[in-house]
Every structure is written in structure tokens, then in C-alpha cells.
Image (cartoon, rainbow, N blue to C red):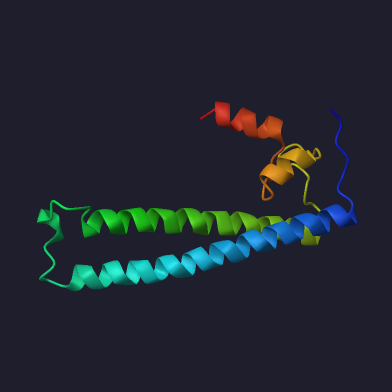
Length: 127
């Protein structure tokens, strides 16, 4: 199926979508920073013997979970920034691997996508 390049209206739509996603991520990262600070404070409290608390996860587990989420959000944020840069330089919606137009349906599902669906599937099958 042949895909056409995005119009200016289409580009503005995706830019707004990406900026909204970025704002949501920034909010989540800010909340996670507060949660990490709470865990860090609890870890520094020597009276908190969480390793022997049968009632729930340990502080180390919470720290690990929150850090993992924070890292994933940071990666997503970087992908959004890269997509916004591609909008600015006129390459948004073009597969960075083959130079083909990325289908609008894929961009709706993954606005930060840098690969067409064929390239994404090919790379995923190589993992």
C-alpha cells in the first residue's frame, strides 16, 4: 500500500500529540522523583527494617521498580524529542532506515515511530 507524506495539518496534529505525550511524561517523572525521594529517605532510616517485613515489598524492590519506570519514561521522552526534531527538520513520517513514508495508522499508534512497520517487524524478528 502506498503512503503519502503528511500535510502541514497532519504534521501539526502529530506535533500537538507528541507535545501532549511529553507533558504527561514530564508530570509522571516529577511524581516519580518525589516517590524516589520518599524511598531514599526510608532507606536512610536505619530503624526501617524492610528486608524482614512480611507485609509487603522491600524498599530495595520499590527502588528498583521505580527506577525502571523512570528509565523507561526517560527513553520514551528522548524518542518524543527525536520525533519533534524530525518534525522541525522535515523528516518526520519518513522511515530512518529505508527512507519510505511511514503509514499514518502507524504514526497514530506510535507518534514517535522512526521506522515503517516493515522495518520495525524485521528488526523485531532479528531479536
